[in-house]
Image (cartoon, rainbow, N blue to C red; front, side, top):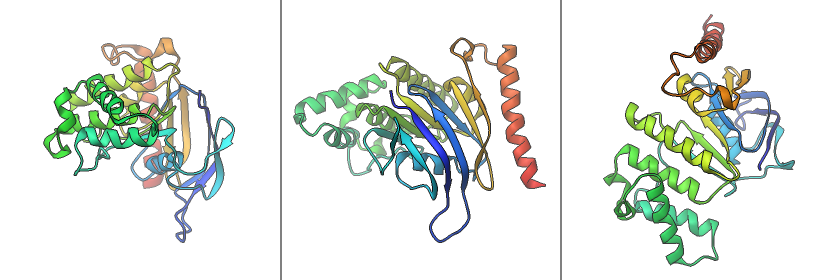
Length: 261
């Protein structure tokens, strides 16, 4: 189980002198599903890039199971809003690229069979393996990206608004798919999921962080016990769910008013 400690992390792009994140601290247990909420510009995606090892903290440190994080790693899978698929490669070739890096000693036939299995697992037909990304709908491309991320079996999964550009029906289906894949994990993956959508965060996450802005910092945090997780069917009827939803929206709006004023 990959536990993650974010220890007083601040970040500014080199030469800018302006902090994007300031004094971020959190301890996340292995297997938690963490939703990260906040207004545009508060540093949600920057925090994810730090966790992915694509950027280095200006101050502070990131630890995984007590070890300092150094650069990108196949131990941390990433799913972006723009799918992250190379357009000149078929869907299957995109997955194979990741698999060959993760399992260099396995033969091509076995890896191809595994890639096809992952496509089927996310609800796609075997024929999608040969299709280019331009031949796929947005929802199909995001399913391919999810298949690619889960195929390398990383203990930590980072998802940056992966469903933000999708229609409502496709979004719900993919939310359920990710929850199903996460729940099936043994052990469960540690997931960080960036979103603007309070309802999405409540459906997916068992822990929610809200980032304030200028510079980004954690202004609110809550843990949702397993027996209190919102169900999609009763999300807008259950009194406790509605209370939490109202509080999350209040925290975000209060941060907006504070900075607008």
